[in-house]
Image (cartoon, rainbow, N blue to C red):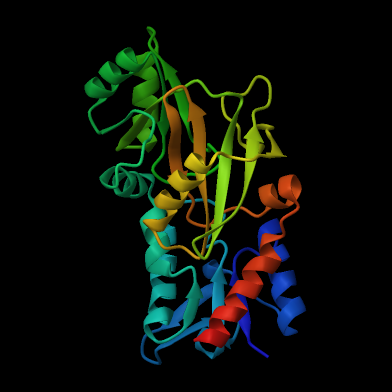
Length: 292
């Protein structure tokens, strides 16, 4: 039987669900917490809890940390080293690296002419103030964050300059996006191996400006138009992940893409669409290993 590890967090719901699926198919269970990994340069070994990770047949990368931050790039570099030594990883670390930084993702989408909400990136507080006055209401987003953590809504009023300075204290490069009118929800359009899998909606909780479950939103099934699926397919194809989710919102000017996820979520598809990604992903990895 294949020895497949899940890179994730032992107490995380999606990690446990994926590890359960792998164990059911292979009879073994390995969960790799990258915070507990060490690299012995002299021996050329990457070790987790006494396990030489090169002895595994494959690793499925679900999470490399509890929150997005630059240090995750270093953890992915260690995984990239494993790949260079011949290890099979899903998704490939060098593909994930391009998505951890919100600006890197945005640049790639922009080059490919993927429609996004109006966005300005600057380190200049005066320019940021002008942008807020022009947009009226803006969402300031950290370059490393998920589920709207660390985001700040700043409006064109007398307190805007202080709000901008407060945000810049922790975010020297300011990612500013015009706050667009949402239809009460945005969409997670998901793909496995580049093939469309399903779509769920994140429905906003009354009183919250964003739709994340972290802010009280809920999941619902959704059937997108072919135009939206095609747009999301093009966006995710730029990155080549094995499993991902494209965040899309419907606007009066047509669908817009917020971002492509570095890891993708399992819970929305399961709760809204009864699609068990953990099992599908495990089967996909096993097929790929048999084919290779």
